[in-house]
Length: 473
Image (cartoon, rainbow, N blue to C red):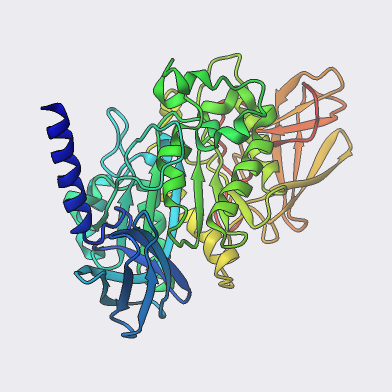
């Protein structure tokens, strides 16, 4: 009887396979946005050793390939300039399948942990400022912004597909869109006037090691792969599972670049973060095989971490990493946290985060002149008459205020820091810092604590990046 059932099951399976039509991964679906002015890859599964043809509505060209002995196939098609025309793509192996409501524009992948994942509707006790209005008006962006959100997916080996289909910007959908990704997309659309597609691939609480493959992680002596293989500890802290189940399955989808907001779960490993971020970016670029795709990322916000953690050192390593990673850039968020949010790791102001990422992409990737993307960055200093004079990059037009500047501290050779007074040297575009408690200052720090929001920026309202002039432990 068992043999009979087995034979029957195999016969049914064979019949189903022989009658199978083209099956596509979720990422290739109705409502998707595809990258403009390039070649994009389509792929799927169908009958074995069968000719697959693809016809795009914008040029009526037919592209063909042949599926392999497993039924897998892929091919590349040419894409036109972006506009708001709704397109179709027809795929056939003898039976036609239509991908409808397609837009051609700019596609970016957003990844990281909860501050990137945080939707417009917010988290419990963690609202997004202006979130309800953004959701209510999201329908105005129906054919301008599209999103696909990859759900949390834990896997031990790299997958070739994952869940998550494209959604139009409508209130019932937009409430679940990444807030940072949404505000980024809005600014990009306003400036470029083309559709924007966002692939949201994040997992709250994840470490950078969660987004790296096993072959890399075996080289890190501090990483315990048994956490993943034996499913021990908190799921979000397990290494490699996000890479395997969520990131790798997307590598064949053509994108313009990456946005990254992660680090809160790696504060305790600040000394290795820069190198691992550099490794991750190199790996991702190799997997997409589209050159040095731009990589823009977010400085972790001020937060009252446990006293043994040194978030200020982590931010320092984040800042340094952009000079190790080609075609990358860091935006600062030091001024985007309210005093009452010191114990809330999810600050409400996601609009400015998204906008600042957009400013960086628009100025650096799209080369639009007149858009500024960097706040003042420490350049040099000199000691003069018991005061320290600070020079900055990206402060050519001075600073955002002349009085009430907070966040600066000075120390003498005893390494004891005191709150500093600050004077703007108007004509020199420099800052003079001093303290009555430090007669012979040798070092300056700015917002170099777990939680110390700053209140000063350059003329374009982009904040001074936290820094220190010393190298003391």
